[in-house]
Image 1 (cartoon, one colour):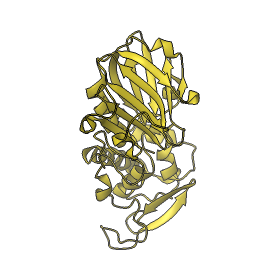
Image 2 (spheres, one colour; image 1 turned 30 degrees about the horizontal axis):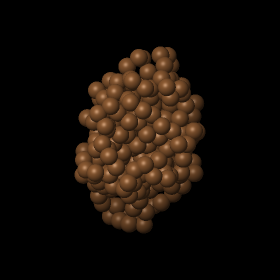
Image 3 (cartoon, one colour; image 1 turned 90 degrees about the horizontal axis):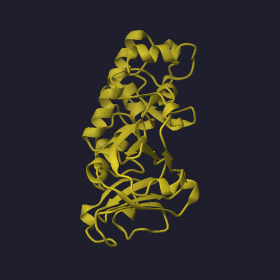
Image 4 (tube, rainbow, N blue to C red; image 1 turned 30 degrees about the vertical axis):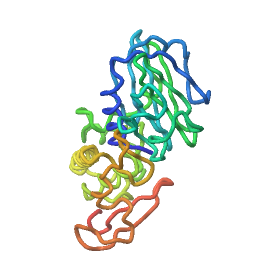
Length: 287
């Protein structure tokens, strides 16, 4: 699943392409993909594109908001061409790294289509059908209200993590991957942040000291910004907003490196399982 850096990059790509455009038509080929009233979207202008954790938020005129979650295999492809697959080099794509971003669209994986008045088209493709698009009018958005502070928010601090850890005895890796606590951190960047902070992913969160929380928060922000800088990680199911592979996987210290030498101490990196998710860490550098 794309994590915060990958979704941020997709958001930035869409922000450049669709803000100011008016929706002419909206089609759904898989009903469970969309929640809301389709007719509400017609004639509405895209005012802004934001991100909260792993969720993309599109604000429309008429006080409407669309939220999009790619889940495991979702993909967004914006095609500025007016017909078919002409001008493929101008497409903006993000999400699952299938050939859909350079293939004829729509295809059998296309679940929703936004058509704009100037001829541009935004396709939502989803191989495994877990992703969603939801439309809300004014008011609270449950999916946004249920997640924690964004990991790059200025208010995300050691004090915040310390307060959230009270009464909990789960592993620290599982703790920082809980989207209800910190929005945007997943398997890859939790491994990298914990290595950066020198904290074992298996350590119970109630055993993490205040000073270590301060270091961990700094490391979470550092590795996420690094992920954005290098265009995201393409370790599994992700291509960036220009449809290419990110390069963050070339700068990973521990994730996916079980059995290999630690770049820092030379000892073997260990692969483990925490909360049903695999993770990698250096037992020497992380305590």
